[in-house]
Image 1 (cartoon, rainbow, N blue to C red):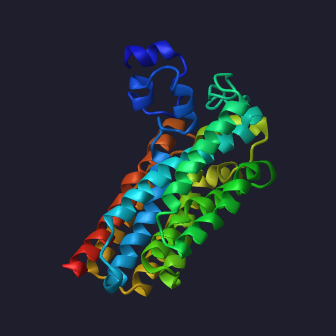
Image 2 (image 1 turned 180 degrees about the horizontal axis):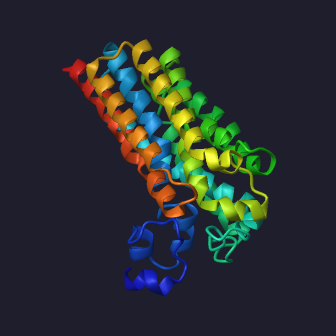
Image 3 (image 1 turned 120 degrees about the vertical axis):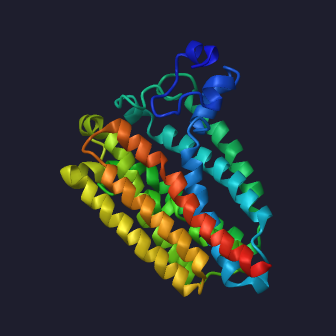
Length: 316
């Protein structure tokens, strides 16, 4: 750990060691960057990947509408970082009292007193403006589609209080890129886009169940509901079922978009990675759960690689 990180005293337990915030950011910036989860990039990767899948699949399915757009991929990356940060800031404002009761979250900027609720709200607004600026670069249909996702974003933080399925609501929000990539390329939606969206929802429920294993004991005390609590000793089997649904829907999406063997190769690599994760799940092992959760970036990138290579091969 760097001297800066050691001197800060607020390094969060689920942040990778040596991350850019704890190691290099000015101390006055750190609470805001932590609100946006810049120290934990896995979140924006998981928000971004369905956008990239759908973009690449649309380009491969309809090369006449244009090749895979590097500009679109870059916009989705900026938008994912901004809107994941906005979503987390909003979530922390809503959950500030619950976060004080959970070991992993009590040192977050708001419950620990580093940032006031009013300051967090102003930071939330700034991030939303960045997201809006990105969204307005797309066609009108994609802009409207993007705004529609805000319904699920607004509802999600409250779900852990009322249902054991908050991961499903997170899926409805985080998987929205499965629609956005297609909408940005085609100016419309079609069956493959909805299948990519459904695939990403199942994937989100699976990996977020793995993530929730970290908080099982504290969640019982705080009364926080989750699929990890609900499935209990059967969490591994439940994650396996959701990952199986993920692959089945991904295969249906690839087939309905009439994609080629490179896309299927990416799908096979994606499936192999998810199968490896299932074999690695061991009860309430928090450290292992966090590692497996983070590994979903690599799983999603394997699928994207196949889709992108398929799109590029058709544009040559």
